[in-house]
Image (tube, rainbow, N blue to C red; front, side, top):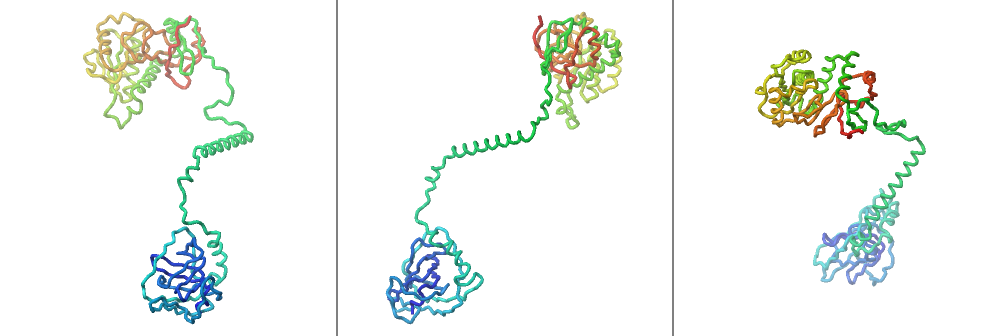
Length: 474
């Protein structure tokens, strides 16, 4: 009887277009040649309708997955037929030979996901649908075994949804206030950071960074160096310390006292030469300009020196520059008698690769990298009237290279310098556009005190520091 299969789980293949349906047989109508499945699944997806009816012409293949106990057909006319197949109109028979086996079990695993149900119209195929029952496998517990509760949990009535309604992405996105959510997140993070910081502060003592002073120091006193014979002008360093200027007479007495204490003239010349050379190398570009891989672009420096002590300081600087692979040209007139310090420095300089000229005609005609001016003398101001001096200053002013003046004169500058380097303590120079620098020449503190200067070193970790004009004192 056809009703014997009511309650059995079957799989109906309706072709590639309509797909494969699975479900329990709820009705077999012999007269209309139809079969009805309840709680059907299409390609493993729960159908949104409780029942699906198939015409025999739609069925390509029918398989029994689980043969249940025969039940009464709901909502269908019962027929008395001993055939398990249905006969379509027109006399063509689609027979299904079924062998009932008690050991049959479900071998298909279904999954749930929303899809659109595709229905196909009547087919005119006259082929035969072969329905077979596969022997059950007991790997999953057999019929009604351990897999059944899991299937009911995944594909039960609770999973039924309205699959025909599209999800409104734009409407749902409009409900999301991005700014408010991010504001709440930031506030939560700030609150968490404050709580953690407060907790850490309570658990351990305060720590300090590498640049913070652990011990509380005294307030900074800017005027740590005071002089009795003030030069009338004050400078200040980058750290705020005030450096007073001194008169030339006090400056000369300071150098004389240093020589009596053992800081000889030769040692002072060497210190001035090293410090001025280091400043010159920095002005030329330092390691970016002076390195073995850049030997074809060696800088050129011209030193204009007079036959006096200030000129000897320039010759000492020229010697150190030549030792650092700088193209050095030394101008030193030979028409006048040179002082002894100049002669000894020139002898050392001649043992380097630097050039020496005694006339402006021997100086470079094109621009050079730097010009160092050591023409002026504090003791011999009348040298400015000589022709060699005037020609040298004219050459320097017409050359496009910047100028560095070492131990500048207190009077009017004949060569426009971009930088000036004072020694020990600055002299009250005439206001100009030059950038003032101060050089430490190694005078001990007690030597300053011996000439009436209450001295505190403003150099810190450097030997050359910049000075900024702080105005005149009253």
